[in-house]
Length: 259
Image (tube, rainbow, N blue to C red):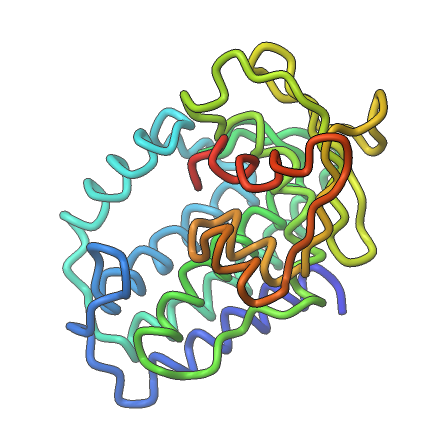
């Protein structure tokens, strides 16, 4: 499976859920949106990403979680479509449009484009889109009581975006924080080192880690996106922390606000 395969497969799975007699008024657990609103958001975001992938300049929010939330509300207010089947088809179509646009643009994978989460290269943009689809797709699946599409294989493709987004999603709880974390997510490894509340993400830790966190890939993504809590992941035996300061494992997810 490639990143492009994962994007299309995830969008198709969301479309299948939305075409199975889904009620657009079904509320999403723990969220203010309904299934219809989440689907509309995914359709709008898919078009936005496809346009960016094609090289268009599409400013959206200010790059902060609160700014993105405000932009989302404004976009939904002027987009009345809430029919699940129609939106499911749009989600699948825009995912394919993104893949086609990215291929047709002929840019280097390292060439930067401007996205709602700041500048990133083409590969990271695809990872961003996949992460976004998986997060809201998971919500829709849970609301409709269907199987979700988050699995170990697709989560691996979200990590480039997650590593890039971490420094941009730090919240006030990180103020003054000093610690070095080593994250072991399935077979993937990377370090997050805080210096006075500012995190730096590197492939290897610059010093001996204070806390090593080994976490199941699915649990990592759902925890990072705010769909699970740290106690939930620990109760399901999906995460373990050790090192000189293992208690920092519980604090780590609280240092960020899900984008």
